[in-house]
Length: 68
Image (cartoon, rainbow, N blue to C red; front, side, top):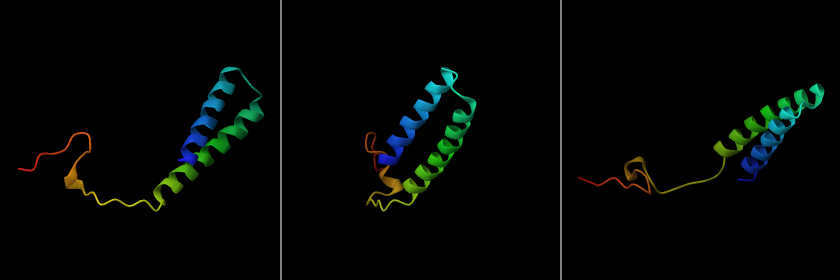
């Protein structure tokens, strides 16, 4: 979860800096770092050791599927 929060804050900061027309070299460096953070966040999310006992037939928790 910490990777998702950090990446989100970083990308919002990047957007704010773009709106204030920051230095081009800084923006390009942050752009490259942001892409790396997105890749790292996706990798960490997919390789997390999270398991569940639910299966696809359980449907969604907030809208359970009625068994017929």
